[in-house]
Image (cartoon, rainbow, N blue to C red; front, side, top):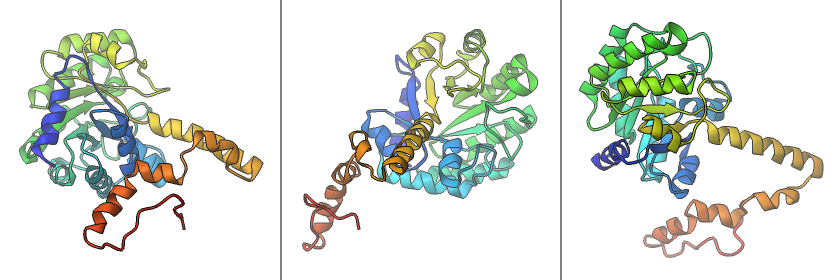
Length: 301
């Protein structure tokens, strides 16, 4: 991770409009985000759980599994990556190890939350929290161990202790030095306006848009008008992918061929263009002149 990526992420927090980061889960999804023109991506723990182990966001993903995805993504794209670091995968000492590892892999910013490990999705019921004092200590541990990465402090207290208590926690996390504050799952626009009014002067604020979740889904422009500085859509692409995947497999099962779906697919040449196959092969020819390009009829086999 370079200072440039952290600086680029920090710049998104002070722009005239909120920074906007779609969620990714691997290098291909991050590549699509970069090629679509976004200035940042969010590595979603939930999206990793959905796609890598086919399970829900209930704390099953490990730190090493996240680190592997960070390394692959940051090797492929140049936009800054905000990483869902869950609880830091343990206590303050675990947080320090997680921060160092994730930053070494290329993370520009890390999000830490105040749930008890194992955590669960912020829009699911049944969450439990560590004490405010313990979370403040974890934030300070993260700040002491980071090199350049920004630390985003998240509280899930709205659903557990109530909205007023979530604001108290958010104030404490800002005072501990967090670079951005994330109050998860406010239930209404009125609650969102209040938290922006009370916290906006203390630190940049992040909003999480989850289709079908607790918080009203709004556009980045609308959230900017309320007072948010950064917006993530963490699982939207996976949900769109699932919708498309069901259609695709139903079509293949019905017709026994992919032909009816060709208008909504890229072909082999298209996928190779997307992932830069010819550019890589051209670079390889500098070392081995016998390497050929894919040509007009490349073989997938």
